[in-house]
Image (tube, rainbow, N blue to C red):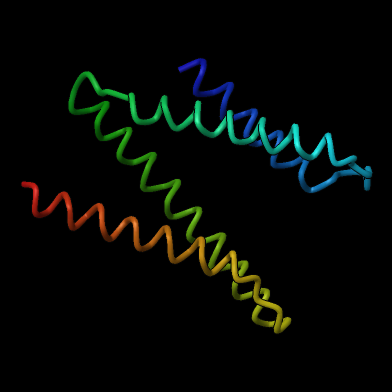
Amino acid sequence: MIFETISAILILGIAILFLNPGNLTMPESMVSMLIVGLIVSFLTFSAFLFREKSSDERETIHILTAGRISYLVGVGILITGIILQALKHEIDPWLVIALCAMVFSKLLSRMYSYFKM
């Protein structure tokens, strides 16, 4: 649990640094280090999520609820971004790609679970 929290905080911190707060100019070496740090933090976080096991039904419900909430927040933010950019007539294709990837992966995982049972 502690490593999940640390890796999640690192992901958030590095992502915020990419926004360049305070208009700091970042040299290429700093950007490269941030990219590597972000990748390592994400892989660590992913490894802990896949290794996550529940000990009883109640804990399983908590894990599933957290996954649903985070999915809905992610999709909601992407849709909000698409709407706001559509109003400016400047839609970033990565927002649409990310939204499609999230919805498609959710659909595929549901289909896999349905046919596996």
